[in-house]
Each structure stands twice: as structure tokens, then as C-alpha cells.
Image (cartoon, rainbow, N blue to C red; front, side, top):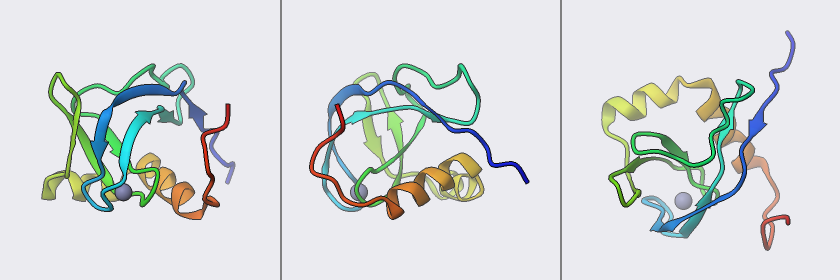
Length: 102
Ligand SMILES: [Zn+2]
């Protein structure tokens, strides 16, 4: 089976949000997608987010873009979402780094 290509969007700044699981402060995001051209410049309300520290799944919500824990239904859906699960696996496997590459 051919491995899928993963497309990463540009880093964008977000308001500071504490991860609902680990409490680390998150102040940026980038899109992650299997479809070229759909990487997206910034998250929108309702989009899923994965914590860069602990790989917790969260949901962007509201005009001020806060992160909240997923509902039971959302958690169930994302547990079967290939893209979300790949993002979580990559975060869990990546070596810890001091700063974002730039
Ligand atoms: Zn976290």
C-alpha cells in the first residue's frame, strides 16, 4: 500500500490556550491534511486540534478560538479519523525539541 502524502500548512499564531489534558500553553497551529490544497491557513471554529505536547484531541470553538475538550461523539469520531490519528502518532513519536524550526 502506498503511503499517503501529508501536507502541512503554514504556522499561524493563535490566542494562548491551555491544553485541556496536559495544561501546556498552545499559541500556534498549523494545518495537517492528506489533500493537496486543503492545508488551510488557519483553524476555524469546529476544526479539530491535536496538542503538540501530549497529542490530546481538542476542538476550536467560538470567534475567539478557544480550545475545548471533544464531546463523547466527537472523540469517538476522531478515534477513527485517519488524519487525526496520524497527527497524534507523529506527535507522540517525535523527539522533544526546544523551539519550532524557523
Ligand atoms: Zn496537551
